[in-house]
Amino acid sequence: MKIAMVTDSNSGITQKEGRELGISVLPMPFMIHEKTYFEEIDLSQEQFYERLEDGEGISTSQPAPASVTDLWDALLKEYEAVVHIPMSSGLSSSYQTAAMLAEDYEGRVQVVNNQRISVTQRQSVLDGLAMAAKGYTAAQIKERLEAVRFDSSIYIMVDTLKYLKRGGRITPAAAALGTLLRIKPVLQIQGEKLDAFAKVRTLKQAKTTMLTAMQKDLETRFHDPGAEHTHLEIAHTQNQEAAEEFRQEILERYPGKDIVIAPLSLSISCHIGPGSLALACSREVEY
Image (cartoon, rainbow, N blue to C red; front, side, top):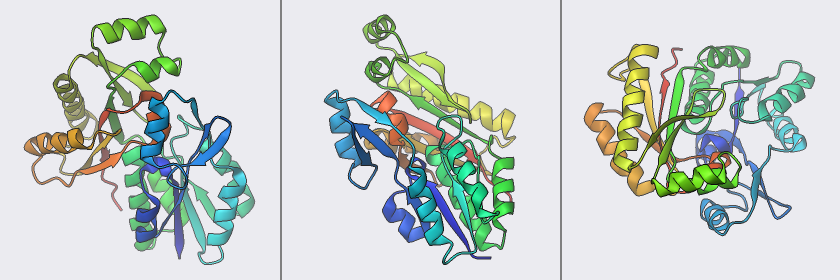
């Protein structure tokens, strides 16, 4: 069966990488001064952060239903089925919309509720691609990816409280106190939503906190203390140099691992701002 893979730009898969891998990537829309921009189409990472730092109000949205079905319709002229892997249903309504639209396609479109975002969502797309190459049907790929949807973790250090305050996620008083104390919160994503995890004051403490949390996940949740069967990933917001340094520290603990580094999705970035650093893992899928 010839199967098309579809995801959105929250996966961190660029349009160029998508074309090289044979993956269709829906660009996520953003509203800036009542005008809609699309990630990587007419809104680059650099432009996004420039406008964010200038204090412009940026709100996120989901792909328009017509853009989703138009892509499916075009792909189904060439492919027998489509596997669509949107960002986590706990962070956006993209999944619910796509699942409703897929009801009209008589099983030819399978929408995966994979509870992932950023580098962990990216790995799910690559797993789906590999399963399709091995002859799995679209329904089987959906079933397998949903079975392992909680086998991932993301821990994110936020460099500034400015954007959490701007988005109303913390009070101005808490932001002022946190800034005075130089607090760098560490957040976590465990499938459903973005939550607080710890408070630290330095980048070194943040990295130690994230590495310790990840090691605990590897030991207690994945039963893979050496990360021999788990993908390790780094994401960041305009923080490539720190990400590269972090990779070297991780390799000291887990030598020989192929650690992917990718920008954190702009849908999260608009709430936490530049300078963040994230550590993620996703268990290898058996297929």
